[in-house]
Image (tube, rainbow, N blue to C red; front, top):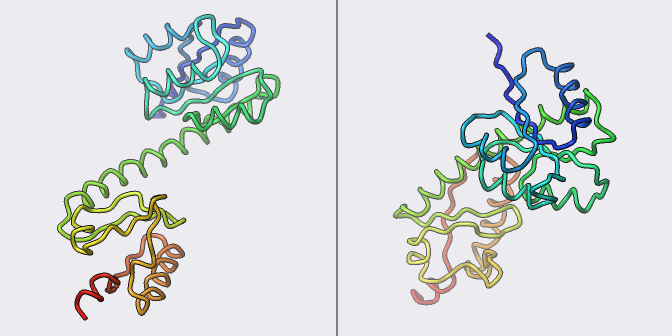
Length: 223
């Protein structure tokens, strides 16, 4: 049995609603469309129902622009959101995506195929984001409760999480004022090994490397 795609369409223009509704019926054989004219109606519907995706017009009688996106995102974390608008402003589109929307469609440019691709892309991208978020939470729990020195370091060298025991074990804070790992906190003899290991892990996602290094302060204290 195929899954019924459950869509919330928030649109106050009768003409735009009819057009999007017809496009959805054209590209999906099994779809349920819930229509709300106002943001307040959409929020009430979201409290009562489960949706696979939200299509949100940015110009509504009771809300306008990015404020609509913020309210919906805050209410339904985890449900993908596609913005429908008449604004052809790229900067505005980028700002909207940064708020948490999965995609941004200009109404005059929407076709059945574009809508179909956007919805599919947004749902799959949201699944990946939720998976990474879940994995990150589990890893953060390990970091925070570990009796070893664990750190979660981004590709640019910025430390996102450091186990409390990590600071205690090194007897120093290896994070600079901008949140980046201080490579000079490692003794010079071990810096190249640490950097080589970091770049190897970056190239081969999912692999684990174990290395031992001496920190400069500890080395100097033990001389």
